[in-house]
Length: 378
Image (cartoon, rainbow, N blue to C red; front, top):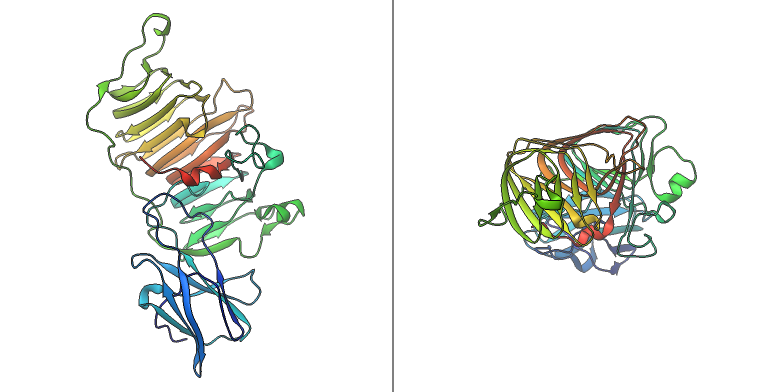
């Protein structure tokens, strides 16, 4: 078909072609957000159907066509200009434009892995800590789980995983899964269907779908204070403020809203974050290891950010949790390989979201908090 431009979302009817409003489910709300596409001036001509795309000049929109509003096929992008021309194979067709994965991605997927994932037996779903219909007192409730546990990956061997969500992949990627895998909607899982539900695995992510590493958020910081008195067993005790240290090698207590830059090494034994407190860790070190993180605050109470030099990160199940909690928090380390061990009778759970270069895990439960779509990086 002759492509002269691109589309954007809106609602219009031209002959039997219906243009629908659509948006990628993981669209963030933090600035700088690209404008939603608006489809304008739809019309039939002798050689086909024409539409104009109105949207942000620096945004990429995918133009999709469907005959059933369920299965959509990408047939062009807005790289060629503001108009599209198409000759539908079926005159009774639907056309829509969706915003491609944004230039400024946030925590909008359960997992975003640039190279990919090698997992087996994992379970992924979602909840919304801001909505009592999909959480209980702001916490994950399996009885209220949603199917928004989406994955964005460059490659994936998902094994026999149970994923209540969509899998977005790049055009040249390969996604494999075992015979007992389940990838799809809540209804797909409840029906006992295996394999991938039609339309729940797509390969239209651009090659540059990964975010950049964060920059150092502050330049002036005090040295992290050592534990004294009743807190002398802690290496550091952090209240409100910006801190820095060369390394973490012991226990850390957080009772305020703290930001900590670590210049070299992280070998944290136990990090305890009290209710209404928070910790943002920024790591320059090549690798980081956490033996346990106990976050008594909400899911944003623990946030890990790896700079470009951070290439490895690992977490172990929290021994202070009887349920095998791995972590309640956020991992943002686009250059790092993340390894999550299992065993010892634990099935570790991650409540939050994970952005890494590569994820290797077995028997992991990931519960994406959809409220994180409103969180901006530092």
